[in-house]
Each structure stands twice: as structure tokens, then as C-alpha cells.
Image (cartoon, rainbow, N blue to C red; front, side):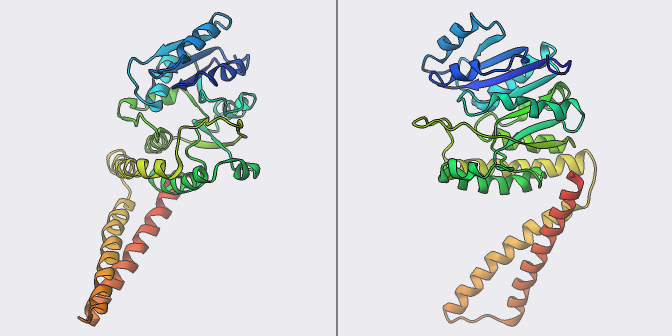
Amino acid sequence: MYREKKIALVIPAYNEERLIKPTLEAVPDFVDRIFVINDASTDTTAEVVRALSHHDHRIELITHQRKRGPGQGIITGYRKASDQGYDIAAVVGGDNQMPMEQMSRFLDPLIDGQADYTKGNRFIFLPDTLEKMPKTRLLGNIIITGLTKISSGYYKIMDVVDGYTATTRRVIDLIDWDKAWKGYGYPMDFLIRLNAHGLKVKDIPRSSIYLKGERQSQIKGLRYALRVSPMLLRGFLWRLITKYIYRDFHPLVFFYFAGLILFPFGLLYGLYLVYQQLAGIGVSGPRAILCALSLIMGLQFLLFAMLFDMQESE
């Protein structure tokens, strides 16, 4: 136990035969139960975990018969932790990239009532992360973080792809996980769902373990950002409807929708007018004014909507 709370650790793992052993050997003594979710690995991950479980009886191996994604692995672990009565469920990857000795940083704010969900941030007071992280992953991280700030409503969080997290059983039981995103991109989707329920999220400074010669993360920078962008857009629209229409009402939804219509229209119409001007057709004054008003009003609507959303999410 940690501060009189029962702690479970969820570790999603897919083809981690080389790194799952050092990951499990580093788990702190205060963790009461370790759920390793083997997502239909095709290597010897399951065998390695079973061998370790003979020496550490806290370890429980759960295997998906077909590959379902890391998000589903975490959800499976969450439900196991809740069903067995654990107060807090922490999550780390099976790639030995997350320092276990820093886990108490994630647990304390939950126990003290300062947050409902804590997540790692490798960039707070840790400038060496910028040097250690591969540049393609860093660029993808920056793009995804910007998009997630808008889609989730948590404008003051960073490093949204970080999978080092912890949450309480109350939150696990509150969220409808059947509708959550199951594949890569799950951290951002989880944030969207947390915000829709008005839950507090806190960034936790942490360092990273980068092993030379090992590709620990299976995320590929820009390709990952492009893959999850449609999910972020759908989640953003779902959050607006759920939080500001269904669960409560706030006029910022009108600002958002007006901005999302006017600004793209003004941008596309402006490009069309530029084409007409270059083609020698010419552009009339009223059409130019319509384009300018659409752009200006659309941008203003979006900025006001983001401001109200930020205030509501503080």
C-alpha cells in the first residue's frame, strides 16, 4: 500500500520480450498488484511474464487473443483494478522508458484531492528531454499537443502523448470506456473524455529512460500525428455536444460552430478570389469585403470560444 491506498499498476505490452523484464523488476514495493496486458504478442512476451510471476506473485498476466491496441489494454487493466477494489491504478509502458522510482509523484496529487488524473510531462524543468528525444517524435509531439489542447479543453497541459499516468477508481467507474479510443492516440482521447466530465488533470514532471540501440516507442512522429488528427476532431465535436449542450449549456458552442464555418469559408473563398485576380478576371469590392469579414469574424469567434473553453476547464 501507499499512504493507506491500495495501488494497482497496469502495463500494456505488445512484443516487449526484451524490455518487459527490466520494467517489471523496477516496480516499487508499495504497488500491490501488477496487471500485464499482453496484447496478442507474437514473440515470447507472455512466457517472460509468466516466468517472472513465479518470483513476484503480484504479477497477473492477462492476454488478449487478438490485437486490440494499447488503449484497450489499459481499459482491460483499469476494469480489473476496479473490480478487485484497488484505490488507484497507475499505468506505465512495457518498454522500460518510464522511471518507476518517480511513481509516487503521480499518486500524491490523487490522494491529496488535487487531481482526478495525473499524467507525465517530460518537458517541465527537464531541458535534457529536448536533446534526448528523436527529432521526428519531438515534432509530432508538438503538433499533437497543440491539437489536443483545443480538442480536450485542457489548454495548460503538455506532452499529451505521455502514457505514464495514474487515476482513481472513481474515475475508472465514471467513464464509459466502451466508447473510448482503443489504439494509438488513446491518451488524447482519454483527456477529451475526462474534460467532458469536468475532471481535474495534473501534469507531473518526469524524466525518461532512453536505451541506446533500442526502439522503445512504436510511435512514428508525423505519421502518428496524421493518423490521430481525425480522432481528435471527432472527439472535439463530441466533447462540445456532451459538455456544453447535453450535460450543461454554454453559448461558446455557437462561437465555435460559427467560427468553424466562417473561417474556412473565408479562407477558401479568399484563395478563389486570388485565383480570379491572377487569371485576369478581376475581383469586385463587395466580394473582397465578404471574404475579409468571413475571415475576421470567423477568427474572432474561434478565439472567443477558446477563451471561454479555457476558463470553463480551469
